[in-house]
Image (cartoon, rainbow, N blue to C red; front, side):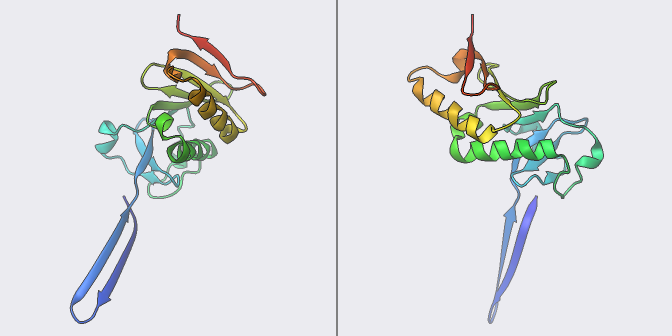
Length: 167
């Protein structure tokens, strides 16, 4: 998973080697599970993917030619999902660590499935980053309660957050 290397020499007898690794951000759930980093580069299959506690991307186009090893994915929807995960990992790490899966529903809406309970957060298709900020503010306003106390959080509607509690 090498991202970059740098070799420098300090005279007379020192050589410095710096290696920067690519870190998996998610796993693409295909016939062969692939890892993908924060720049949407496809990493080769590795036993790490079976043990990693990172979100799974499912419901995306499974055409193998969209995911060339060592290159950026050609799937626009996967790139958008990576953008969502990047935003969450930077500004809402608590939710990122609780995501089990990001999937596309039959209407191509992004859906987050949380790992603590199978809480579903339907983000919709557009204004995703704006909706993530609303979700974060909603979470902070809950006080002692948590997002996982809800069965469904639907954010597809303008200026509304529709919630369904567990019964």
